[in-house]
Length: 293
Image 1 (tube, rainbow, N blue to C red):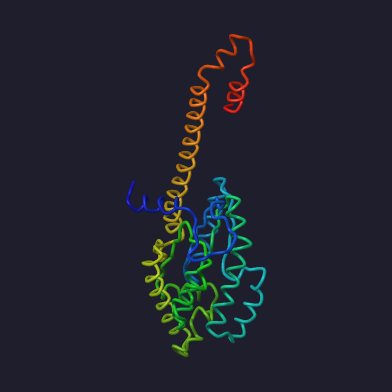
Image 2: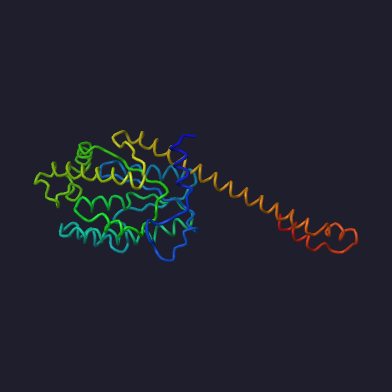
């Protein structure tokens, strides 16, 4: 097994944890599912890859739940309306997004993970932190805001050159998005130039975060088919590692039960055998036998 594959399995098999204090009252040992994140800018093919992964996993019998930005039942509509007016300050926007994230974390992700689902996140806190930091928010402050986040089992960042992102967005929407172009930052009155500069800054921040958070960078300049093949290969390793852990735990449990039964028999000193000879009911021996079945 390659070193990268071993590292992926080891990371997956670590106990669940939060980046900081997390959500009060959550029993992390009850989160049996996996959280898999796909990050990337608009035009990176991120949502397409999430859909392909969901179909692939469900065909294999894994139940999935999708989450993403601005999908909270609590504030998503209000956040959309505020962003359309282009009136939000940087910190206000960050806190709006944090509220959206926290609501989904508590009311969608946690229940799904408790039930053993694979949660596929179409972007996570990394995009939100990168956006805030390039707009001048203190890194320590924004990291503290998102310290409630659960550490994912795997994170994949689709790295796409800014020029290819421009082409894809124009081909799909015919126009560039105000916020994805960083027009609020006033780098340029030209939206095309502003988009290129903003995406360059975002990618620079993601490279810095990759060193800190250790997620996998995927070449997103390739075809959707090639990207999906690589993502599946990574996730296959993770799922196989998880299955191996479950089987190992099951074997350990069976071994423990066998040892316990053997110890009980030795402690009885053969009383069960003597009971059968004398005609007395072998109560303890029968109870042990029924339990083993």
